[in-house]
Length: 256
Length: 181
Image 1 (cartoon, each protein chain N blue to C red):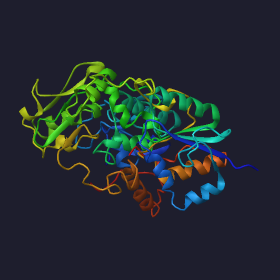
Image 2 (cartoon, each protein chain N blue to C red):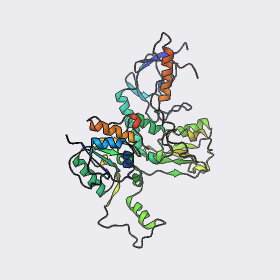
Image 3 (cartoon, rainbow over the protein chains, first blue to last red):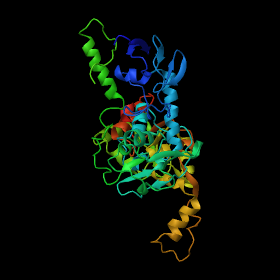
Image 4 (cartoon, each protein chain N blue to C red):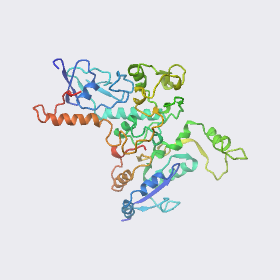
């Protein structure tokens, strides 16, 4: 801990070790920075930009930007909330997200984020462009209509499963998740137990045969909004700190 | 003082949102005490009886009649609320937006495996409202003041929005009541 330093998120002192990203340090301090492509088991990707914060006045992705000593980070401000809202609304406008008929509804990070950001209706015109569905695999399907190009499946298959089942092809609006060359999903060595399957934040990669088995009310985000798990860690920290001299100053979480 | 008037309609929707409004249980009795229903399937008035304080419209615009109806609601209502996912983003009917309209009609009325249509043409009677090229959210057609998403919006969401509107407050839903399913 000797080399750790302090920086500030919305005025709250946060401790970080050298090399830690802003998001990692915030996470450890119980401060939630909204994000979609970031996942604790994966290398940061910096793709969705939902975690955009301002460090010393400059905007950057909190998931890739290393924290710096004494830097001042703006996270939960009106301006940044509006930026994030726009980014999430653009994702809804770009894909075909029919939540009312999606088996991921209630457990979807994109949807939960839209709830938390207070998006009642999309303000951008939808593209309404049909995308490919690949249901050739016995246990897993890809519905690219719901894909947000977060690359979690790409990274998980490569780094956690050691398989390289997924990759990207195309550019700009034509970019899409591809499986190993021109093959169909059934031609890959993807297994239903691969981390790449369940790590999808939306309903793009879906296990077959288990849709709608969790009743409404018991789904992942039915009880508490997205991010509250990170923040409740903060509450525990704060109540712990009340017994010390430090007061409400957030510190690096000791456990884990 | 005259009671505020509420109008409701279902365009390209399934009436599920109206069902959810009725699902206020005994709250519907309190609501009926507070307001007067104007044009609505609830009292079966087909035409506006007067100026309305609030218009609740379920469903998006899929045909010309839907467009005429939402424009009339805009003319006759002080505050217009799009109710449900079909109204706010097109919903299930908007799934046809991924397929060109002529292909949709061809499949539904000519090529579909269970179709019996000796004429071999999609229906084109002048009595039937013409379909739009795609399904539109209500705010793409007229100005909408508030959105009540959900499939359907929960009775609590209706309650919160109506309570706010009837007391002249903004009807922005608190995050806990925003749902898309």
